[in-house]
Length: 54
Image (cartoon, rainbow, N blue to C red; front, top):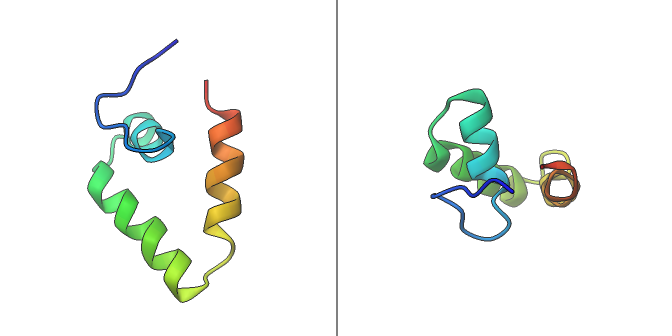
């Protein structure tokens, strides 16, 4: 089982940032902004990714 040092809740943003080599803070800001603005369904996507990630 892989551990992510920047893990906050489920580790999805830390996992994605490590996988795509982008800043974890920027990714978290994007997820929160998308949730607030109602763009797509970021909460559902976050939960699905939490189930899919290794």
